[in-house]
Image (cartoon, rainbow, N blue to C red; front, side, top):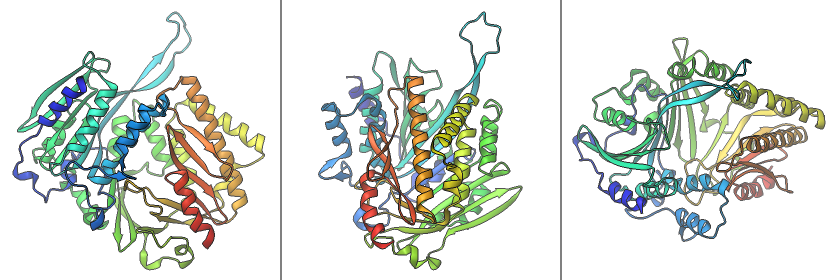
Length: 492
């Protein structure tokens, strides 16, 4: 079997440990300074002695089984439909995020516009469609040489989605560092997988040359994000050295990479997010006791702006009472929720093609007419400024930030009506789009149960939402939401 041979090659692709790979190395040392987006996080149990990363050869367990074993059993029993397979494979990889410190990088991306013309003789203007031209992205794990779990997941994906008739595995060098490259004949030349160890880190990347760029940054031969003057200053202001998680967006570089070919979509999205004049944006989440801190620093028009959204010293007891005693982490955050709920959907629409926008707007208008509901006003005008977050029920696999979120509201009847209408519209849109595109592998459904719980189903049951008397509550699964609601509804 090709994937067995691939695994043997993977197990042999261990680069030499060099002085730069000391325990003091920061994961941001592997991020090229001109990267567009970075998300980095420590394992969910990083601060808990009882939840430290597993020993070599062990996997996070749930009910006596690893998630990979559960997925394998469901696959063998034929219980995962075709449209759920991609999401099942993603789910089986998620425990890696709970086990290792990690960083997800968008190093570079570009797009192109193609003309779609059914009849070459047709003189009418051709439809224009945006396509990916190239992509460089990666995920970095701090494995400390304990690469077994990552290699096993790679082997599973390689075995499922490619074979030796269409794929070629080769060994390469980036300076003194060895790595592997997998090329598939069905994909364009730039679309290759690359992976290998860099000291105590293991890198899995997509896009030709990505691994080499990360290796050069790690070895200090090219600029790295951790040494960037703005990032260093912003990280100090937001206590990045103590952060459980942080994410960075280089808005100006992202617009330069995508803006012109994307026909202004990136600029429109940034404008809807009120970020059109931002160049850099850094967010960090840290911890004081069991309370989470949330900082942000961004540069706008040449000036740095600092925000602290969560201050444990000022937590309201009215909101604290809905947090279960069993929660080991919590945050009460003051944010412009009305802005988020209004602008995030607008930003999503701005990222779509004109045809998709028109279809969505028609569906939205039709739904409001049929229900007699002003969905935007019924939802947005009744949101408060407080968001309560806690980690109950705790995810059995310690997936990072699998949390319960409660947003304060002042009119549950209006919010419930608007939310029902909004999610119904979204479900209808997803169904119509899937049928139009004949989607099979990545099919998402919006479901509504009799007890008022809404949730996503994509092979596996995804995030869920429900409106209570004082909050809109979201959690990472329908059952997790119901467990949280047992406590919230007793204390409201």
